[in-house]
Image (cartoon, one colour):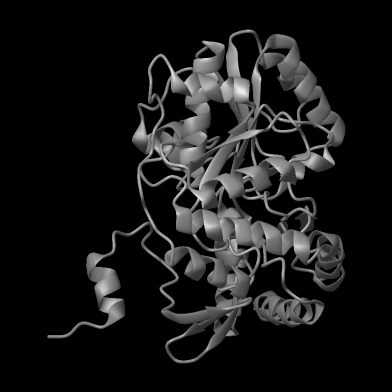
Length: 399
């Protein structure tokens, strides 16, 4: 008996929920996905902030092909000089526009970057306490999950790491909870899974000052915001601060798996001794992924995609006017559209999928609709997407 791919999916793929979207996609291009019945969908979430330069970007594909003609995996991370790694590391350091974030440790994912940064912070400061924010999400591995700011999401997996505390994102008073006992605070410039929550420039400058005052490392999680999503290459650049450690992944790879944590040489060197090989990875910095990432970085900068982000944000804001919408929040092309409740959001999402548009909600804010399209989306495509969204909202609102 021959099984269909859908049957194999149900039979052999470990589930993450009892209700996956279960779309069977046969191809992807630009902002579009095409299923096995040739139905096209606008991908309005970029595979959750991954496909910043669009699906199958030609320059990314060419970089992958060129690298495949040279070599793939050679050796565990940090032993051989591999041109895709060193050229990407140089480009990333330059992209920060600061001299302090001058070394990069490559990983396979954002969660791995979080784990490495946690180890680095404890190793460098010789402190144990780590602070994160309520409603924050930093990954699903043991350490990253310990930082999650939602007890329901992590309670079933306890015991997790000790000495993790939480503060309110954007609350000045809570900054006093950062003390000389704190190794690091992990924080997002824009709270992604909290439903696109932003804080003021003055807050982040006060946070930077407090960390400096007590010797705590400031770790900025830019796994969702990095590589141009908010309108600057890194979201921290709009806040006039510099972190001690910077985290990246998702949009970094142009669709390929890669992550990184970046810091000053003085911090990074502590991972190389006592013990030697204190933090190692087999596939981190895979040359094919690094080649794809470098092509992604160059494409964003060479095509001035950052210059268009604010105008595209404004177009979404101008077009998405409807009585079902309670609030429109956003930073660049990272947008939340709040509705009355999850039931309403889910009904709109389902109607959108029927009409050829993919969107989603947020882990810790299920009454809001997620909009995070590829940065290459055109103004006409934004109008098409908003038309589908408004039609879906009309149908749900009338019912």
